[in-house]
Length: 151
Image (cartoon, rainbow, N blue to C red; front, side, top):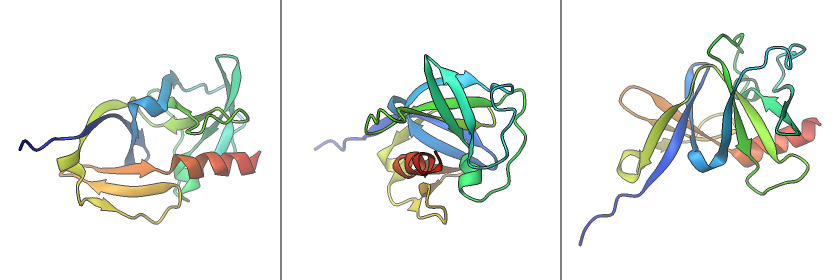
């Protein structure tokens, strides 16, 4: 019998002091950071809204949701446009502020088995420790719920 290796193509999304993993299928697009659209951001979890493909998309800071200090976005900052997992019409997309350009990551079952650790933030499902980096898997449903309650 051949051992089957399950894998999911993911995006490694750079945040302040951590890397977040999301399946490619959850990410609609990576766009440039729009300093003008979010100029009035007051460092709360919901930083504002940006227009994207005819829809106003709320932009959040995962760091702010997790009570971590924010960093001013720089020249390499991006926004990941993420699909709502349930296809909610009220908030169909969410923007997540990134500190740098995302990279590809192949999440394979042997790399992930038994490595997940629960974290202290309700918006992150668990942490995966690897040799060099720690990766965090977000609770997208909880993040969308927090944005919905903030509106």
